[in-house]
Length: 138
Length: 86
Image 1 (cartoon, one colour):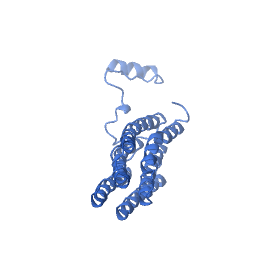
Image 2 (cartoon, rainbow over the protein chains, first blue to last red):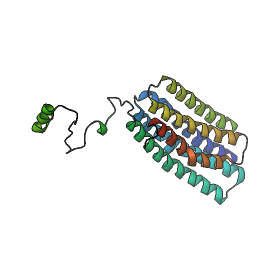
Image 3 (cartoon, each protein chain N blue to C red):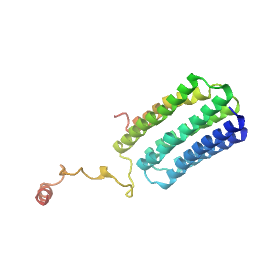
Image 4 (cartoon, one colour):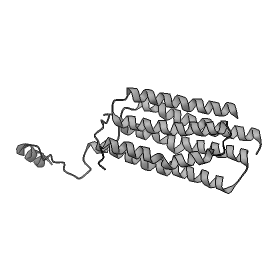
């Protein structure tokens, strides 16, 4: 591959991917709770890191020429980043909700804060009079 | 090529520093776990670019393995958050 072309492509993909990771890091100051931080972190792993993998593949292509194992490794690395990081984000957000991390009042939509539609949410610890009143209203 | 790679390493280093400042100022453990993940992936990116700079032959292998085992750190942090409960 032409050296100038390789440098240009590595620059475009590498700098764009690094900037997306930096933007995710800066966005962590904008949002106020752990759930939203997990949310703004997804572009870094879903788009920024695959761009860096593509930059690494273009560099390998320029350095050693084309071979199938490198292409396979690059494709599997991109797929791993997308799939594995999604599962990891899901696990981390689930555990942060389960462990009772504070959720900012402006996090929206926060469907976990209220019961699903059609479910009557009765507090078992509430006094008997209060429970009857709630049932009567609904 | 060296200039481009150095710029990328610099941007990722700034991302790590910003994340560490966020760890210092964050009050809840969930945010710290997320920032730990961010630092991990930024470090992997930096390692990749350093490999390009020294003309290493395992650039792709490194980022491939790191992306495959990256879930382990996150799952360990989430288990720590829930104190071992699933």
